[in-house]
Structures are given as structure tokens and as C-alpha cells.
Image (cartoon, one colour):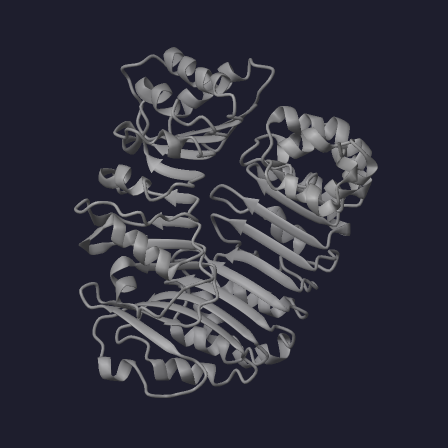
Length: 554
């Protein structure tokens, strides 16, 4: 009989492909030096974001001391496994990983950032920070945008955009930057202080305002023609903006980024008479080096001349329109489409040509639909137009129809669904999703479901809104593989004492064997604080209360 050491690396990696990361770490670590090197090479030790507390402690106490010096990348999270960053800090585990040059932190409490910056920032080449909350950690601007850092790549992702204070940002040498910004002023500051920038990916806050007198003066008097001198290396620019960038300003920016080779734009705004194809072509005509264009423009208009909206120009860029006259809006997009995300109303999606297939799209946001459509039609359309779709969100209530039998067509690749608004048709729709792993849904959808255990048993992450304590245990008993649970409580059930609510929640945390993360969000601070005190008694759990969210990690 052959032993594991007799197998080639590819065969061992094939075995790994059938296992979860925790199973791989527990089963294969320290079997041999060769296996350890394979685990290091394939980064199994570096991503500890989604681990139960017991496995994380094993990593810190047994694996990091032995393998830490060979690790050059590290991912930590307080979002799923609350307390990881604090545990690493308190026990000085970072000292066991002195050679980290790529760091990813998913933080809830921003005060923990300074410790990691003090240890690693001077040696980092790549940094990713995802932050929660309604305030941007000030330490981001203070620490990252100056000459002292040696970052090549920086990714900053959060619910709100960064707003730079006066003179906060200095000349620095970041080449690849992804971040969310508050205002156009912040974008102009980046342009002025990143001379070697090659790739820039910017998303603005929703409807951020620049309209005080000082900001208007800065925007109007800025020398946009200087961008071709300030940014000679910028070849790749991605911009996502919603109602906060006029086309006039957009045009002055784009036409002066002379060296762009790739431009990806997601743009939503009002335009009284629309933005014509000829106007857009004129803007792009200044970019002589452009080889890849990806546009998705959503324009809300007052009145438009349809004859003038489109042009007969025949150059290398092909523009397509989908118009919703009832809503007075239209979408303009390019094909082929290269971005991984796409957003459109179902009405306009139905108006796109049958030949338009969005192969690159993995995340789709569908908004309102005015006419009824069956579930089998939805499955057929989405499979045809988005063959690689994995994440689906319904932004508003669709007028779905339960008429007709469900066909055998399934959305087999979709693993993540946000179905909060469509409670009436949830049971029928969920049958289209045999491989669902993550679900965000109104609690009332689940209460009315029957016979869906085969689908529910595969779900690893569940986010529930407006749940009821009295039936919570019964509903969750169908989710036998659940690892992460988020509960959003908008109203307090005064018919049940808080002690009984705690008992129910404790029974869920302690009784669901695969569950290792529970988050409870509520505006009722007194109730959350009571839960915090009660759960903190348990030594086998890490409990954290921050910004109206109670987090439990076991």
C-alpha cells in the first residue's frame, strides 16, 4: 500500500481540493517537511480569517512558531472571527512572523490598526484593509500616504470613503491603489501626490457633496490639463461614481489622462437631455493609447431626442443602449464587458440583444421589474447572459410569477444570494439554487418554507432580518452546516424576557456544532450589553461589543 509520501504533489493537491482549509491544516500539518513546504507554498497557513477559535489558537501556538519565518503573507479578520487582531497583539504572535511583506486586515475596531502598522508597515509591499463602521480610520491617511512607506499595492475597502484633511496626503510611491473616496477633492489630491501611479480603482460615496464655496472654487480652478504631466504612468483607471460627478468634470479628467490603456467606468447621474454617444466618443478620442474600454452608464433624464442619442460613427468602440421610457432612464454599455460586477433593472436587461453575453460578471444586482416574469424565465435568462454568475442581489421587489411548472434549469453556479425584499416567492426561487452557500434573507421567508432541507444543509453563512426568538431554534435546525450567523434585530419582542432570549441564543451558539461565529446587530444597546455580560462568562468564547453589534467567536 502506498503512503502519502509516495504521491506526487499534484495528487496531494487534488486531495486538498476536496477538503476545507481547517481539515487540511489539522490533518496534514507536520506529517513531513515536504508536506509542510507544500502547505506554505499554497498559502494554507496565511489565511486564518475563517477559522473557529480552537483552530486559530492551534495555528498561533503550534504552527506559527515552527513555520512563521517562512510566511510572507498574512490575512487576519475581526469581521467573522472577532478578536483575531487583539489576540495576535496581546500574545505578541506577530513576532513569530517577522518576514511578512503582504498583509490583509479586515477590521471592526480601527484602533487596532496602529499596532500592525508599527510592526509591519515599513517592510510591506502589499496592504489590504477592509474596515467597518460609519467613520474612516484616520490612521489610514496619516500613515499610508507619505514617503516613509514602501507600498507597491494598497487596497482600502469600507462602507464610507476616505476624506483627506488639508496637507494630510504627501508625495508617495504607490503604484497600484484601490480605495473609496468621499469627494472629488480627494481624487484631485491623489492625482497631485502619486507620481508613479500605474493602476487606480476609485469608488465614491453615494451622493457625496462638494458644493460648498471653497470646494466649488477648487474644482472649477483645478488645472486638469496638468494631469498628463502629473500621471505619466497611469495606464489603468477604474471609476465608480453615483450622482457625485458631473459629466463636464468627468470629461476634463478623462481626456487629460493621455496615457490610459484601460478605462473601466460605472457612472450614474442625472442629465437633463441625456449624454449622447457622440459626446462620449469625443471625450474618448483624446485617449490615443486606449486598448480596453468598459463602460456602464446609467442616466436619468428629463427629455431626450432619441435620434440624437445614438450616432452612426463606426470606430473600435461599440456602444449599446437599453432604454426604460417609463422610468425615464437609460443604460449605455460597451461589449465585450470586462468587469466582474453588473447592475441593471430587469426591464432593461430584457431589452438587451440576445447575443450580448456577460462572461466576466460574477456579481449581479437586479432592480425593479414592472411586468411579471416566471422563475423558469429568470433562470433561463441569467444562465444565458451571465454564465459565470456566483452572487445575485435583488435591489427591489420584482413582480414574480408562480405560474407554470419550474423547469429543470437551475442557477448551479450561484452561491451567494440577497433576497430580502421578495418574501412571497422565496420558496419557489430558492429551488433554482441547488449549490447555495451564503444567504441574506428576511426571517419571514424561512418561517414559511417547507421541504428545503437539502438546500439549507449546504448553506455556510446566513444573515437574517427581523427574526423572532420564539421560532429561531426551529428554523435554524435546518441549517446543519452553518458556520457564520448574523442576526439583525429592528424591534424588541416585549413578550419574552431577556433571560429567555439569552437562553435561546446560547443554545444556538453552543448547540450548533459547525457554527463558530455569531453577530447580533440592534439599536437596543441595553439588550446588547446584557448579552455581552452573559456571553462573556464563557471562557471558550471571545465576545466583543462594538458600534451596535455584538460578536461571538467560539
